[in-house]
Image (cartoon, rainbow, N blue to C red; front, side, top):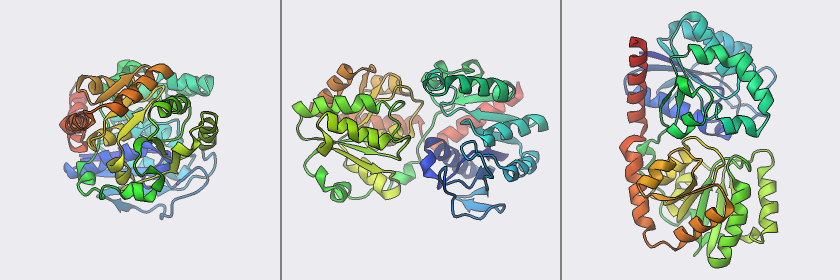
Length: 389
């Protein structure tokens, strides 16, 4: 099958987080399964800078044909006439279109072009339809945008792909959806760095209980304003604890975290690494003692899957995708979104003697159904079933 993937940003623009990783990993898995995959995207590396890639010519990325097109203006929306023209040509040649949505020109235009051409398409929501996410920032503007710009795109799609039941249950247009989970590629974990490598990079971690958070430094969504005070209280009963926050800054999140750490007297026990990837990220997962994701709202986090597959016990809130499976499979601890509960969970897991067993169960959970080869097969089965109706 000839598949067109449309994503506002694409590797290696890792600053933009999870959706582009999902788009690329899924595209590569579909190629491995024998499909022809073309990607249309922008050449943005950040909101201010561009990737050093040629435009208007295809590049091969892990077997995927990728067209990077320039953004002219409205960079936060990613407006690109050349991307429109490229997508219009590629839509006509595609058997099915996969649209990765996040309030961007690319996904709006891509779904519109597929709809007008009568081509079947699937929209991946990536949390953009979650009620809490809509209400947390620019709620009225987001609601108006979804109604005026995206309503027909959503209604005419084969289905909307939500990455976890928890995301579908808490999202707008949930009745139009199917659960297509995110995943990991086990091959990327085949050659892990030697233990201790990340601690050598950050000597302050030597002999510490290393607690890892991996993701954008989004204070509100990721619950980091809850995590820092909770960590401050943990530090009183577990002086060895050290918190590493690894991820790109967002809306001055790093500055606010440093202020909170100073207020709670843990500035020496909190390390911000910035964005890490490749061997350095693997080294962090290898050396960490436990992983924490205290989000206010979250779909199925790639970082959570990576932590589980790396054998880390986890602490997550009951607002994070996969929390029911974490609880059922005893891969860590699930907590309500409040400081007292988070402190109790961190304290319990810091002292737990069965963290290794929790980690082994987490790895088994991910291997059982959250790898990209299995997810690619599931997606194509759902598409073929929808087309047959």
